Image (cartoon, rainbow, N blue to C red; front, top):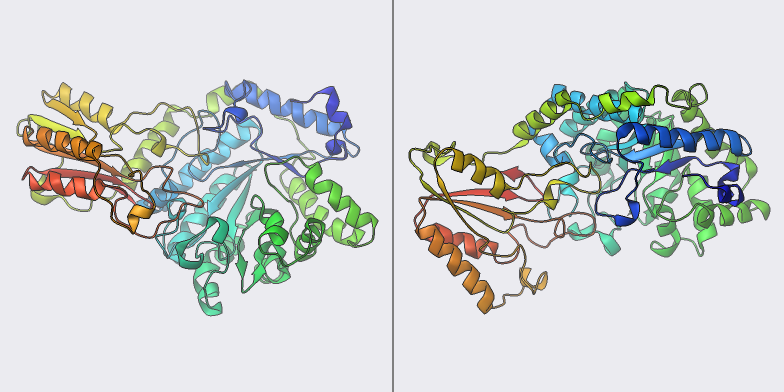
Length: 512
């Protein structure tokens, strides 16, 4: 929140945007704030911040409050949605439009003016750690769903920002992180597959934002490429909003891709290429001070700076920030965010997103008169964090598979046993994905306990897959089977001859 010291900060000249303002980012204690909830308190807080920029900065230009929203708005107790790979699995344009309208409405009432969604990356290598954040592998399918998201969000006067532009989802060998460079994609494949969703959504839904990606293409960083950022994006596709960098994408021009010799020259390269706004998790002066230095020494023209600022101001005018920069009736946020109807929509989307791979002998739904003793087992049976991420809502109630199934089974007269059986990964991970290691005594004992209880049960529910530590940015894999000892444990359960219902959460799908 504003303090008297703010007048001595560099943002007294104004800022383009502030990302994730007072949202209580999940799993980050440093981001916890008293202003995120109740919802009206957050709307009031953002009004206070916005009023400071209008009344106390040199030019009085309102700030754009941005936030993530790929599976629900990244805000304390906003409406949660399933992961994008699950959203894609619904194949339901109407439902996805409804969910996007929810994100747009909640953003509007909470005070956010720009949401970083949808993700239009085409995932063709399932080893990549961020497949879970995409709608899938088909460009047409991705474009259709992405279009609905943009239309639904912007219907509420909130900007939708596409990501990650461009050719981001095919890193070499499925790897990302420190190797997030050099996608091996031929030009024709790039245009017909990976750029197709961006072209269609920009031309048909007119999003007000695009996020530039970390990677390079053919040795040139996308965030420092005039071809990608201006010629293709603005001239060919007709994009007329502003381009924001993914975190550190600008910094990578000099310190990872090394196509320039210094950070100031990375700034120059990015701005001349068409990047309008730089983002990362450091204070603005880290960027603005070297920017001012290259302007003052004549390395960057003032007209180029005007061109970048013009894109931001135009978007702010389109958002109505110069007409109504403050939220009115902020108490309405308590009635309009995460409503009972939103909860019902979320539940329906989760149901439609699930993938039933096989149902031999119609074993599902479970018949309480047939199955009296159930074993619930597996490393994710008691897991909670896999249901959320830092790109979605936080602090909503979570029911584990074990607790939910146990409550239902007990109510129907079934007896429930539980054994973890195996950890998600073993102590030699990730080397053990390639190099075999013998079971430890502890691993053997855990499996034996699970098998013993399985033999005493009528049916087994095995809950397995990957956690947030095996899936996500910089978390690619070399294989697609269950990590750690999970497959071996699953085979032992199958060997008991008892029916096995296998619940699996992986980077590819969520299924039964």
